[in-house]
Length: 351
Image (cartoon, rainbow, N blue to C red):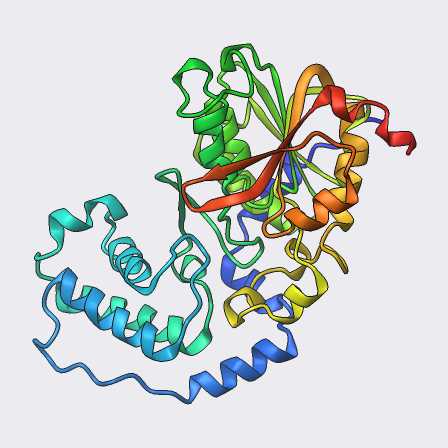
């Protein structure tokens, strides 16, 4: 089958505004009810001169976020980190610069913008990344909006620790990153992991696939921002379908893996994201099964598959007791990503 690149279409779509995409997005009944309820809430009024420094605004935001019982799982893990992220982003500072400017004064105009986003974070329950159109992975900024899930994969860290040859922090799963010539990122979403992979493997051509043309438009924006449009190609399609018989040294994927119970229990913040990026079926493995069964046909003999499944390890182990999976830990996760070699996956497409 001929490859169907979406570069041209994605470039055109990327020019449309995030607000237009958001306006056409269908919101779940639960999300609408939550927004209506929260919109009626009012935050304490802030008088002139009451909030002065960056630290003042972070403290105020932290208090409001705790009071509103917000959920944090979109690039920040707690209310303090999220408050600092919002304040820094609106002041055009990298989060790492917060400490240097913590006691600096905020202008009245800047303060109004910060308070507006704090109020919208509480009243709409939208992830902060959508409100400022920015997320950081491995310290690098990426554009994001409601057309794609907010990226928060552990794979970026693993590329640094387990795929850096002798320079990695843990046991390397490849001998030399310079010898990796082809990488595939399935369910790429905003393209962040594909871009990090392109940086980790400088001699590789990277292909990235997603079923959502809207998500691919966001990915194209990020690809262009990082100047990788000659090395990273985006494809629209269902997993391996648009790739023909192309093979790779490495396949990475953070597919939909939330099970039915998890989908029913998603916090309001997650309901603002595309549901197709979460829903993995009854046991969370609908997409994971397809990837495992087909990946062997698209891997070179020395390659392997790196797949994130969240809290689905028990289901994966039960579904594939014959596979020699290596479960990998990160600074903030334990056994949520597995590695399996190409040799172990060969011949599974006929199972």
